[in-house]
Length: 307
Length: 108
Image (cartoon, rainbow over all chains, first blue to last red):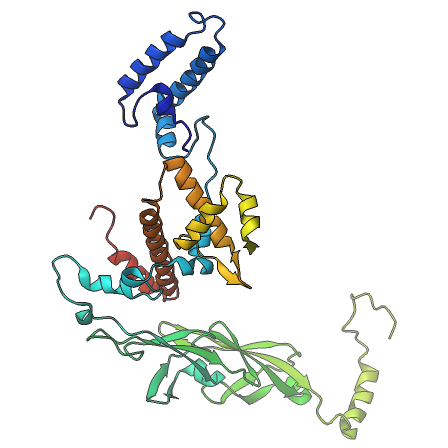
């Protein structure tokens, strides 16, 4: 049996106007007032419950919360029952209605596409775009730097892909209309191609610049000169200043990534290689040379006379 | 998963005969295991729901199947909508933006 509602307590119906609720309350309050009903605990208890009912029903906000079931007769928050998370979970599927609204496929919802007012067209005439297709393509370092055309061979077709100069690792290229075919004349989806760049044995990318460690001989470092340097567009000649230290960084302007309106540079870091260290002539020369040149390049680093 | 008697103990106000009737009416769908009914979490929550609407809104046996049928439709739709939303969420952001623009605003 349902519990007594606040409306029952005041003897009115749900939907009664605020005025009539007030009148009903006043009438009951007079009848049941403890001063008029001495030694009648029953009347006093009813008086209290009438006052409590009116407290909620006279307050528009509390009244509407009560009407919505958010608070109970005492004004306390009602616990929200927990059916929804179960119903929407996988377990709830068994309560899914069969037949007209049945099934867990999206047919009912997709069928609504064709049922727009005034349209009167069936779902079959509704055009849908095709889905996108995802591919992955690995290009070598130089191709990524200078741009290239690549051919992607798929079971059913080949796609020609233009790799723009300076493409970044993981960048996605979109080929319009090369995805799955559309339905009922809808446009085809796109092919999305994620591009990966294979590492290079000596070039490294640094944004739009390219870095390279360049081995030079002792003689080249000491005497300077013009040497051939690889770049992504082929070897170029570069001047090495006389007396270059290892680690010296030289710039080849405009030999990095070439983008429209901006061109990167190539930075070359010299690395002195002794090469054939057993060369007796060189060793002999340095023995004599070292006797006459006692300078310590580590001076000031706290190494003292340890050597 | 709990058995019939444990479910009755959990809801003191639920009578044995009522629960049997609810299962026979297919308002609650326990699984059968070794000739006994076992109730999953969703079934327990559904029993609580039926008790709640019966007590709070005085929904009787006549109206209950109507109410449960409507609720089941709503939840079935919500599950399907969730799948549609998952499919939308998997689309590239420009597709999502285009769908967002195509959705009529409330009142249009």
